[in-house]
Length: 409
Image (cartoon, rainbow, N blue to C red; front, side, top):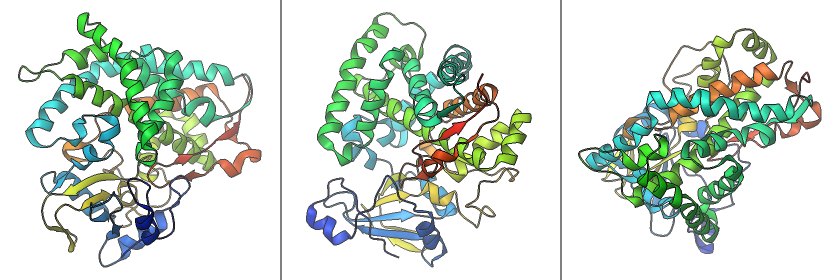
């Protein structure tokens, strides 16, 4: 099956014209098209030639859960090195793009900075104070746009706090993060944001190198595996990955969780009354509307997925959003529904490159949702803004706005 799909990343005007009508990456609703792929004889989408840039070959997209899970676990046949070739030009030397023993070693260095004791400390000293400061500003008002006032600010402030960036600079970091994430669409702007972020972070990194303070950045600079530390390129590469990814992804999925609850008022009342349901709300939202719908790989050899041939060197997009809607694994998979049997989903990927920040994301979601329900009683969608309460986007998904009313306090 072939889909006309275009991206501005490296494509010439001629290639763009051949590929067909532009896809609106910000407002797309791709799930029905992905469902057609899953139902076809070959559940691997041929998205077109050179979509990932000149000379990259046919871009394949894996749509079914079983196949997506297998591809992500097989890092020898499906390498993550493609991330270094594309987003790496804006983020720098990415651990994400490494493989094998080199990846294991550097991942272990970074993982130490996300140890459980750090997460516990961030809960009380950083995460909870940030969400409550944001809620302080709207609780007396009785109405707000939760995207503008809370979800778009909360995760990026947490990430900045973890990295030692003053919270008053978090808005600047949010802008840089957006420009780095969208670098393939506007390369000049993306490179400028990448350079500006490193120039800002350099004094912070050097200060921790001279005098460790026991915080995340100190751990990142001083952690050792087999007598080796991260070099500067990998430190700044990781920070340019962490700051955009940690802010962008969690803010979108938090908006998705809130919208799901608001659209299911009976469930919202249950969760108000029984907060032990919040972990289930989080996992069902991650499955139903993950904020990032695809993961990039490249085939290292001629191979096949579900009987569909893929040639060596072809870029492969693992459609985690599609796989999490696979009817073969979940009944009524397109619906948000509490009470499902617990099953592994792919919102954070799987295999050797499973997201390092998944525990932090779950912590932010758990604390954030609990505090919102504690502080904003009788939460409901504002009829005047209901048209904006739509989850949309192709690669990144979330609502543009969440206009709500609640009992002022």
